[in-house]
Length: 389
Image 1 (tube, rainbow, N blue to C red):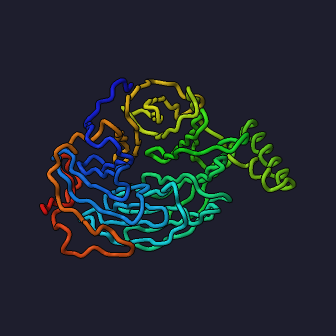
Image 2 (image 1 turned 180 degrees about the vertical axis):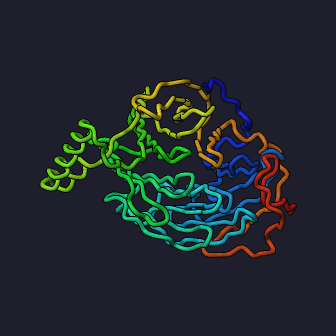
Image 3 (image 1 turned 135 degrees about the vertical axis):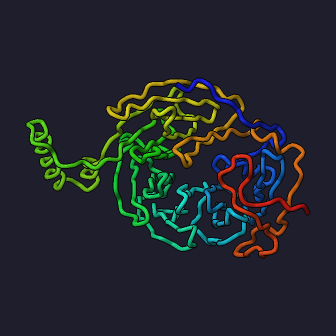
């Protein structure tokens, strides 16, 4: 049971941070502040030094990292940097309007798939290979605009939800074929806050602006056995399938969609939240973090599902949580706002990219540091050595 969380770093020096991302368990931290929303600062927080900073044409809406790439999303463009030297490799210009900065970046060490909305009015998804800098496929996922995206750890599946929030779909990657379709609810449209696969990709959780968190099981229904119960189930399944052919397409689809395997009912409801599935002390757990600073940890019955039991609740004053799955099937909680980055105090500045990443511009080679890649050392920011101005 998890009954204690330790804050591993804190700071009051930058009180207006609205984006903070850490490269797995390394010392690399990316920060964007409200006072300078067009600038991304990259720090080695354990050494208390700034690695570099980049400026962009418009407000930065989201940043994500993996072992190969650092990706920055603006409303109408996406910038792809090499994680080894932070060089700008590619700018995707004139992407469909994306005011929420929605995109997903896979964390698998051998691939860097990028998924982002391909249309501002319908639910198209573009899958892009950020390693080879080439488009992979376009997935016609939903009728309404995409609102949530998530890759599984192996980067073989992509989950999506639309602004209506009733249907969650899972597609194969890189093919883009529909594998699963889950119905979150029929009563009303909702806003999906987050989607997250379990480390083994057997489950998918979804949180929204309602009181319920849903966990879906990703399993294909196989042929029924020979016993009477199975035969009766198979017979009824065939009857429903036959009957559905006479119904309108919308109703027919509802009949064939799987419902939640397990659920959690949050109190109070309505708080913006994020959820993730993790293995903690060799047991499956659901973690839900809310915008008012609460972290809930639930037990998940992987065999029978049903209502998940609350194991612990932690109040994190003045803290906003971002939950991120990373390699090794572990979970890192990045706690920020007024309390995260103590090392921002008294930073020894590294080099600053004053010109920034202008639209379509490739930063000259001589402006980047050369150095060994060291991704497995928690005490060292991996790739870029510090340059003094």
